[in-house]
Structures are given as structure tokens and as C-alpha cells.
Length: 232
Image (cartoon, rainbow, N blue to C red; front, side):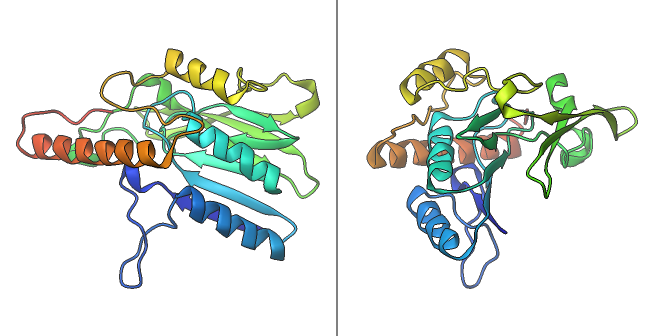
């Protein structure tokens, strides 16, 4: 089994070079070529992504469309993170796409001189298990802020054909164009952060990516000047 991991440079994932450590870049052409090569040498490929925007409840349409394409190519599962909240689980052609696992590695009041605090909806955590027999299990946790610990709640075996389980994506089976409209209506961030659509053109992708990067740099400068509080 091969596990391929990719990070989105638009959200400050530094790309690895010959002289600098970093991530395997989440750039569509590179992802597709890397996966295609891996599938020629492995019967089971799983892709793991650091993608999307922080605190978004739903995956970006661009990410969802790519996840579907990877499954069509032969990838057995797509797992995502970065939203700092649990996102949905969608089964596509019988394969799981877990868009966001949650916030395990960022406890409250630890970073930024003890000032880091996330909204209450980030306390819910998810671990997703694929067994050797091909079964799918979800393990649910709740983060105890005061005790700084994860509290186990319960586990559940998912049977995709039953189409009913905690965390199931309500947009399962939705077309790309319909999901674009769904995301636009229900997204968490609505101001000054562009949406990357399912069929985003290379030109618009480049423009939007640069805007997000420049916006992040501007916010960092304002925070350093104590003109803006860093929020999650």
C-alpha cells in the first residue's frame, strides 16, 4: 500500500526543494501524475491532503472534484485535514473521502503565548479506520479544554450501502455544479476569501491563489504591529 501526502501552498504549506524541507505540493497536475505513477506499482493507494480553509464546515468544490477524480483513477481512499473541525465523510464509487479529521494537534491556549482559542465546534474529533478486511470504522472523540485531553465517545462501523451514519455528507451524489451552489450558500467564510470552484480555470486559480497568499501576509503584518488580533 502507498500513502501519498500533499500540502496546499496557498495555505502556507512550504513546498520541499533540494535544499529545504517542506511538503509534496498539492498542485493538480503534479497530484495526478504522482498518483498515476503510484497506481502502476501498487494495488492500493491512499491520498492524504492538507487542504481547504480553516474552520470551513464543507470542503472546497475544487478539492471535492479532485477527490472524485482520484477515486475514478483507482485510489482507494482520500483523507483530508486543515479545517480544524470535523468535515463530512462521502462515499464515491464505494470508496471513502474523509474531508476533514478535526483539530487533534492544536490544543487551546497553548500557541501564540497562550492566546490560541478555537470555536466550540472544533472540540469534536474524528479518527477514521480502514481495516485489513476493508471495513470502515469511525472513532469519535471530544476535546476537554480545561483538562487538555481527548475524551473517547464511541465507535461505529460504516456500511456505505446503508447510507446512514454519523458524519455522512448530505451532499453525497450531488453534481459538481450543484455542489458549487451548495458550498457558496453554506460556506463558513463569506468575506474576502475566494471560492475555488469545481472546474476552476488555471488563470482564475492563479489569481485567487495569489490573492489568498497576499491576504495572509497582510494579516501577519497587522498582527505583528498589534493592529489586529489573530483569530481562529
